[in-house]
Length: 342
Ligand code: TXA
Ligand code: MG
Picture 1 (cartoon, rainbow, N blue to C red):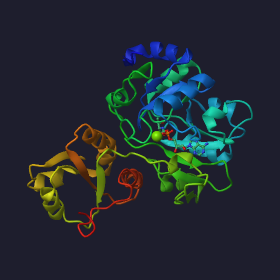
Picture 2 (tube, rainbow, N blue to C red):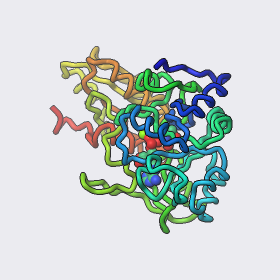
Picture 3 (cartoon, rainbow, N blue to C red):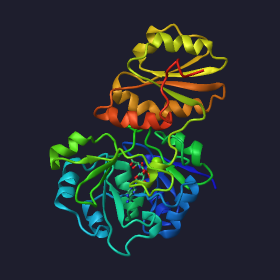
Picture 4 (cartoon, helix red, strand yellow):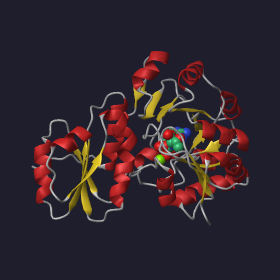
């Protein structure tokens, strides 16, 4: 199958493909999603196949109105309505109890809840309107790899497996939406994103954050959290704020292979880099860094000589919480520390 790149002037064609039950990747403000008609069981099954995604990991349903949520949710609690009003369109995914028999088990991974997201991206809202159906949309990467922030990333992972990609250039936020479970009495953040705990609490008061690490045989709250994630081929090392970049550079120089160095521009400018350092600028500040993180990790996958990647940490507050959550996963929790590294 040829994978077509749809321009923004071709949303009608992309919508027609979705209606036919085909898979079309779509842009959002966070990352690109792999779109299919959420009401078409076969199309949804093909999403799991294309991504190589385990079937117990449920999909987010993308909508372009609260009315669309009402069709599928058993109820929308008042607090959920308040959050929709405050943050939609935007990077907050809300999990609600599902109405019986309205969406297939394939969408929900067999759970009694379903996740809804109203993305802040006009072309995709137009796509949903033209297709006339809600769209499932996991991140449009091969399962386990960093999420795609450009149409080219999607093409790299999924060409030949999907009908098309709606190209809207690089995404603005770069890390996936905050996932908030509102299907229980006490709302809980299952995945941190650009909409922070503080943002949410300013609207509905105190909420919880799920820090629980899931064991092999447990059923996790967000099934996606038990799988290996965002992992490039090379080992990633987190360079904490307390680390001296001079030591990092010295370590790079001693390695017999190339080392990717992902840091803010000011750090790259300061250091005299050894020949085997391959730099990737995270720009300035955590907003730039979040937008660029996945692109950097992906670029090093195309450079087989890069066998390690050192990546700058940021304080885990606000958007930094989401950035550090993704960086930690891509590094498997491994920090730069010359005492323990060889
Ligand atoms: O920003 C985003 O959210 C992107 C864009 C494309 O919208 N989408 C995305 O989808 O990141 P995905 O499938 O890669 O991640 C969704 C996460 C997974 O960890 C999944 O397990 C969890 O949300 N999830 C989905 N439905 C759930 C449910 N009913 N209960 C608990 N967790 C759920
Ligand atoms: Mg994903």
